[in-house]
Length: 70
Image (cartoon, rainbow, N blue to C red):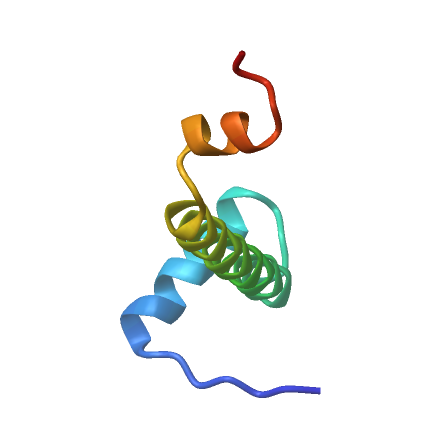
């Protein structure tokens, strides 16, 4: 169980969203938190892949080493 305090404006926004989508406020917060965590993890994986790609050898060099360019 987790208790979260929200600023009045944010709580009103959550309540409005929940009402419009016929959801419980707790479900709105749970879904938003899950999406945030997934997006943050995806961004970290993308940054890691980009760093790895930038630190690797150029494609032309790799092709020569593998004997793909004759």
